[in-house]
Length: 84
Image 1 (spheres, rainbow, N blue to C red):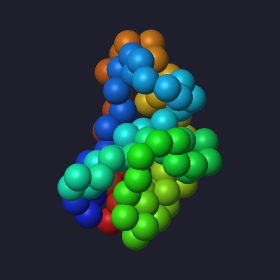
Image 2 (image 1 turned 180 degrees about the vertical axis):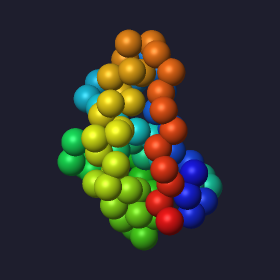
Image 3 (image 1 turned 180 degrees about the horizontal axis):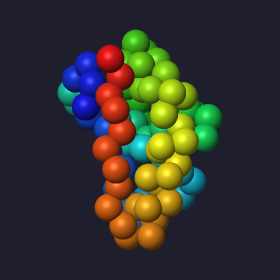
Image 4 (image 1 turned 135 degrees about the horizontal axis):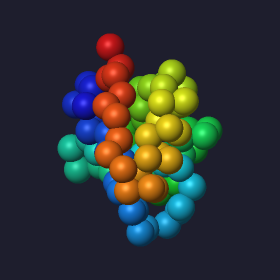
C-alpha cells in the first residue's frame, strides 16, 4: 500500500486477462494493470493515482514479474517496496 492505494496480486486469478497484472484499489475505484507495460486492463483509478501505480510498476517490474511467476505456481509472493 502506498498513497492510499492498495496493490494486490492474486494466486490463481481466474478473471481475464491472464497476462501478468496487478490489481489496484483506491477508495471505490479498482483497476487491473499489466505489469509488462502499465496498460489498464480493466477498471479505473483517478488519473493521479493511476500515474503513481504505473510509475511504481516501472520501478519494480522485475520484482513484480518474479512474484507473478510465484503466484501462478501457487507459491507465496514477496513483498515489493512501496512508492515513497
